[in-house]
Image (cartoon, rainbow, N blue to C red; front, side, top):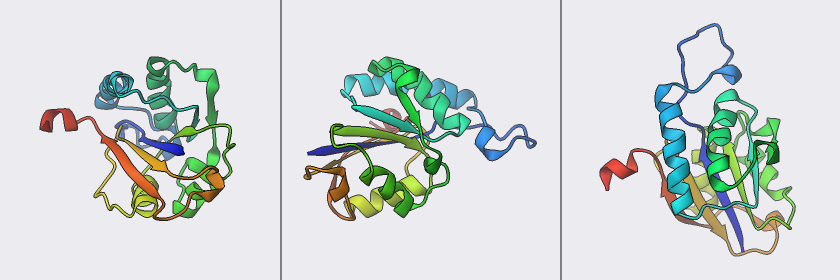
Amino acid sequence: MKTLYLLRHAKSSWKDAKLSDIDRPLNKRGKDDAPVMGKRFQKLEVLPDFIISSPAKRAFKTIQTIAPLLGYSEKSIKIDMRLYGANVLELIRVIQEELDQHNSIMLVGHNPGFTHLIDTLTGTPIDNLPTCGLVRIDFNVKSWKQVEADKGKLILFEYPKKQAKS
């Protein structure tokens, strides 16, 4: 069994038009949501063996805030340039290249790639993975190389505004 967590970065700021997209920081809501979601992930026992983040400032800051709450140091987070702006095929390639010694991994990145990936891997269309939203997808496979379309089962779908709806 392999478990994939997909975490979309928290809400980002568009305030400084001079910044390149990759350098956009979190806004106040994003800074507030990340630790709240980290505590929720603790309660849900979200414990990936390995974390891979997009190099975008907003993605890395999101996981930098959440990782210590899950028992990870910032140094243990791998940055993968391919996660920034990745499409479904690129994301699947990143997953399939993962070491099989890791039974669960977390990718930290962006839409629309993550929403499309969830739809592709699970065959369960979701409208949108909101900012700071997390999904867990389980695969009944022995190797990450076996991960492909419609082989995953959507187990968990959490996002900041879900608490308010419950």
